[in-house]
Amino acid sequence: MGTPLNPRSPLQVTLTATPNEVTRGETVRLRADSSERGVTYEWHVSGGSLARWANTDDEVVWDTSGTEAGMETATVRVTDRQHKRTSEQSTDVRVRIPVIDGRRASLSVHLEPAGLARTDSQALWTAIRNSSESLGFGEYQDFIDLVLCRSSQGLDRESRLLRAEGRAELKAVGKGSTLPYPDVDAYWLLKTATEAFMRLRCGILVDPRRPGEPFEGIDLSEEQHRYQDGPVTQDEIETMWRAFIEPIPQDPKFYTLPYFARILDGLRDVPVRGASKFGFPCDAILRYKLTHPCLIELLWNYWEEESLLVQSMIEISRRFQNMRRSVEPDPLAHLEIAPLLPLANLLWGYIQDDQHRLSVARRAYEYDHHYGITLIGRAVPRLRGADSRSKFLEAFHSLLKLCTTFFTQADDMTVTPDGFPVLNGLKEVHLLLTEGQHNQYGDLPWTARQEMLMQQWLLARPEMRSFLPARAMVAYPEPWMGTVDVMKKLQGWTDTPTLHFHNLAAFGERILLSIRFGDWNSVIERDEAANWARYWRAEIQGYIHAYRATTGVDLTSDRLDVTMPAVHLWRRTERQAAGAGRRRAAIGGAVGAGAGMAGRRMRRTPPSGRPY
Image 1 (spheres, rainbow, N blue to C red):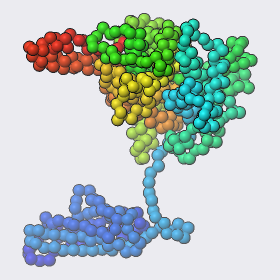
Image 2 (cartoon, rainbow, N blue to C red; image 1 turned 180 degrees about the vertical axis):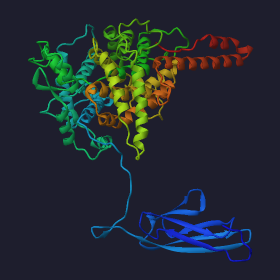
Image 3 (cartoon, rainbow, N blue to C red; image 1 turned 30 degrees about the horizontal axis):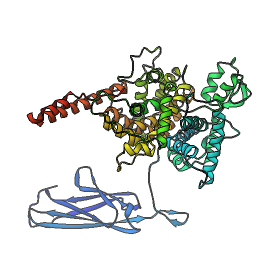
Image 4 (cartoon, rainbow, N blue to C red; image 1 turned 90 degrees about the vertical axis):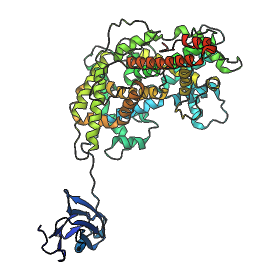
């Protein structure tokens, strides 16, 4: 563009549109050619939107998505501010509206996620999630309240059926259960009802003749969101379930999960025939476990224990027996439970039954056997485990990191996410989980789940909340959480909310169950792993967030963390206790000589630290 010879000459501008006839939704390139330098351009169009072309002002792109049918106008105003000259040019572009089946229609363009292909194993994940929810505290509290607390009057039909179902199972359990202590009927009923609840709710039925039982009560709207490849019905899920399960090699009349079928295929001499559900011969027990696998994971107990649920009950039990703490002042000094309240007799039975509960050390050994992690604290002895999964934490955290990379790819609609890294991570975690699936596996997690469900129910009782009142404005999803948070505040333990530990327990259990009981060693297609990551995305990202909130470690970081979570929790608690000690010392020093004795008493009180 040249320099003007005469500043008073008219400002020359040429406007071009390429193309000048389009279908609505397409773009037009607008260019203004001026004979001057140092001019500014101002663009206007009668509809749609504009965007700059490259880094110049004399060219723009016109998106015609918002235009009407017919002729549309584009206008450019060019201003030479130095010589106070302005020129305006316009051009017309014909916009067509697409016609479909003789009718004018709007043009909509969008991208769809790539790599979606439904697999039969998704039915197993639906069954796992449904089983996990049926074992939740809300379901358990309703069951126990129906058995222990409510009369039959005013119950709806569903509650009456639940009560009848629970009573029938109670009779079966109660015949072989008793406690050698007097005046513990209420506690005995609580313990028996908890075992009955576990028998009714733990696990799924593997039977192609009754494919609907594992999916009873599922939320189809939630499943629609998780399947992602289109609408899904319960009939379709049941069809996938029938295609997924396999007959037991030793007895094809019965079916089991493909993982179990693969194990039994190499153990042809193992009998699985039997006459009854709970009777002898012993092979009936094996058949029942194969056709009714109990879907619980010990990781749930680990994170609930790290939330200090168990330790809260230990402190309440000690105070109930009039045991004073060595540290002053005793935060539970005014805990008094009247004998007229039901909780008093329940706690009496709970304490009498203490010798029959799992010890902290026994659970710690099993955490080490399953996952290579353990507890740290004063009540945990030095462990000398015979078999530890030292590589599990590295493999599990690596899988979670691979999932975050997969999610980033999946969110980019122009990229087909690669499921092979996730598949390799699943194979590694599955191998380590099944290596620890021996000896006490099954029985100890079952017992630990019963005991902690009972502790949660006791802590959620109204009588308990009367002297350990939770913060009224915190919307706890389960009532026992507020009691534990209050106890941690009184005792000077960790200030991390119990909710984060509970999320780790619930999300971690579902993730590991889907890995443990999946037949991952026989999977070679990436679609299976891609579907797994998509289905469990909420739990995976929820676990990653809760882990950062409790330990301070970001699992999405490129630096892989393999330190036991108990170590991180110990360090955070020590830093918290040290900070509290410095604050107490500062307060004591500020009291002055007149109140020096009180200040010295405050400084002599050591921080509580980890409660174990």
